[in-house]
Each structure stands twice: as C-alpha cells, then as structure tokens.
Length: 149
Image (tube, rainbow, N blue to C red):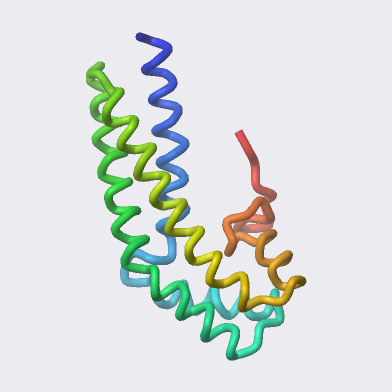
C-alpha cells in the first residue's frame, strides 16, 4: 500500500508540472501578450513568413478551447488525486482518470502539431521540435537545458 501511495504521489508531482507547463500561455489575463511575444520569438528563430505565422496562430486558435477544457479537467482531477493520496484513500480510480485526462491533453497537443507540421519547411520542423514552443527537449527559459527525471 505504501509503495502504491508513493507511486501515486510521484505521478501527481510529475503530472502537476506537466499540466502547469502545458497550460502556461493560455490562461490568465497576460496570455494574449505572452502568446504574441512567443509567436514573435518563434517567427524569428524559425524564419517564418507572415503567412506561416498566421496559419500557425489559426491552428492554435482552432484547438484552444479543447486544450483549455482538457487542462482544466486535468488540473481538477490532479487536485482531487492529491487530496485522496494525502488522506490515505484508495487512489486507483482517480489515478486512472488523471492518466486518461493526461492522454487527452497529449492528444490535443498532437492535433495542433499535426496541423503545424505541413506549414513548416523540413528545416523549420526540425528547429521547432527542438524548441520550448514544441515542448521538445531543447532549451528552456533562462537558457537552462531541459532535465529528465
């Protein structure tokens, strides 16, 4: 039982960070400014044309509501799972729900990436995959390399 609880808490910690990372830039009043700044940086790094930028913005916008709903549901389920785990309750069902919701957030992200892929040249796709914009394993904020645990 202790091992299961430790696994569940580890999963919650991992997913909590993932949910926050995914939700950044789409929630709160500063989100549009953050997105515009991020898009300008992306345009500069990848050498995107104005048409490419418009098409990428459209792809993000098309799936924004779906992603927001997935992230919100994931955040809620994670909070509930944390509470269950801290109270020593059975976390089996809630852990399965969190895993399902995490899968939905990944699916929503993949949909956006599948729409962005054809917009980019092969070189741009490679660069995009290496950037924080693509949530790849490239450099993170402040120039710190991504770490895997």
